[in-house]
Image (cartoon, rainbow, N blue to C red; front, side, top):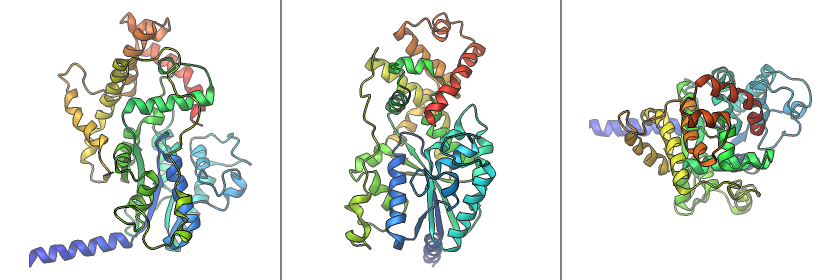
Length: 392
């Protein structure tokens, strides 16, 4: 009888959870399929109103950020305002962070009253992990527009993507940077030049910051999703937005193809044409493996997140295997866990500098074993504005 009552209670609780309104924020970070996730969410909400999803795109944005209005990138202006980039050309008129927060807050309340599920987001939320920004303040401001985590009527979920091998993630960001800035730097030269390369790739710190605010986080293991053969778009529709789908083909079951326009919604993960090789001094396989291990040792400083009750990992594959490897990086080991970005960067220099044989001040300090924190920080500060321009 007790077992039956427990089962009945669980079924009741599950039904309540299913009946809750949902709010999903697609949180990136950069170069993890964010464009695909945004495109699918935006398209579904626009084309299939019967699924009761609404892309949050406040009407007031028509005047404030007209170039982004009614597009999957409409949330970009919100993050730009939060970080104080109010002179960004996306703004058609003067605005403030509070105005942007206000128009979003009002729209979310209106949609909530309509009983619709809500979805929006931008990979630029990874700015909250920047060492040069007050990330906690930015996140606290963002949270003022969302229903409280304690709201029993709305289930708020932040979706973060995890891409591995980590060195390929870093390489992808270098490719993006080269296509934007076109400095002609090799992969290793780029690592040397930009100490602030971590912000756009740091899914673990982003996840940690969100969890500390009491938010639920769904981590998408991109390797696990790739292994299913279904593609990121179908996973977004069926598993993240939880639109009923067939188990085998991941196609929505309640809507005819002509209504859903399913094939039109599918979009390959965003891959830009352009740089496809390392350019210049190519790293060896050994160097790439060392870089990957260093980035993993940094990720392992967040191993405690594995026990976080508010964290759900979808299609756990490479993420779980990476976390299992953290046991290799004990304090007593030759290569222990790395607890800061600064130490991670310095560890990368120990791989990059001998390969480049550069006379850069950072490399001279590393090669002579006389590196000082103040020297590295001074050079890093000079490069901050240039690196963050790429992220814009």
